[in-house]
Length: 77
Image (cartoon, rainbow, N blue to C red; front, side, top):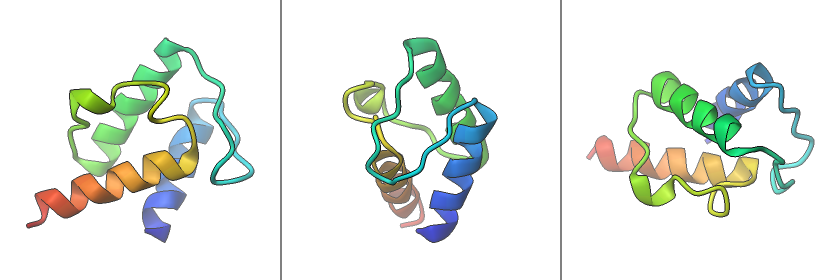
């Protein structure tokens, strides 16, 4: 999970977002959010389910890391 976290921190930085704590709420608009989702899907070679395309569900680093980890675990089975 540490590798996912580090990659996610880099994706956030590439999008101009600096996170200091895992549970810190990330302030972003809908365009930034969709850009993050696209970057995540490309970097991790996953598809984020439509059910998770919601700023209220994914609004901190730990939310993204947990989601990515669970999707990767599902696809590796």
